Image (cartoon, rainbow, N blue to C red; front, side, top):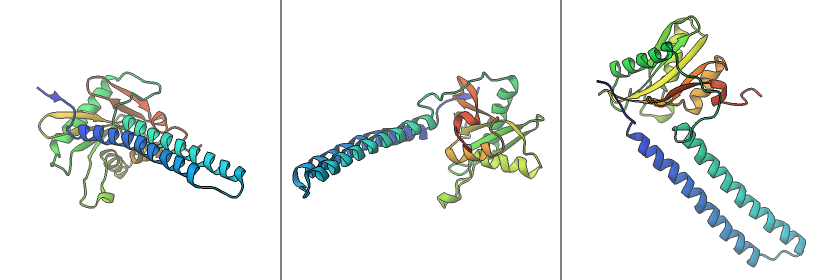
Length: 219
């Protein structure tokens, strides 16, 4: 029987997100202390300029806090801790088959720490292509499963896609449904903003248009 579980790295992802949120608060506290020090110790020749400089520094502190909080929330969306917004659609039988094809590819090509994320896409005319991610020794040379799958389809002359899904597998029957990273979202959307992306988790999967995952593209 196939076991469906969360992959172990998801706990590290959660710690990464938590660290980002804590860091944002710490940085804000540090900058606020700097603001207080600035307001008490720095005296400019003109009081109006001094007040304006203090006000500017305060707003910079607040802006940086909001930016770090947004970064943390974005990370939570990426790893599925915050539910994505948009027009959700239930999966069809063909979508479920696409997930199974990704699982088969994940098992068939699995190599620990090198090939662990497989993807499957369906073209507009119903053909299915799969691919596997490549974790290189040099980080910038990594290839995501979605990109590998698109390259496979393009190599066979297919450029019009209907749906795509990515699955992590440990080669032992454990799987996790993954949301595409930012780079993959860009690549997928280059082939059409109406492509469906299957996200969520294996217990409750659903699909969204890639335009919902990458809003305001080309705007």
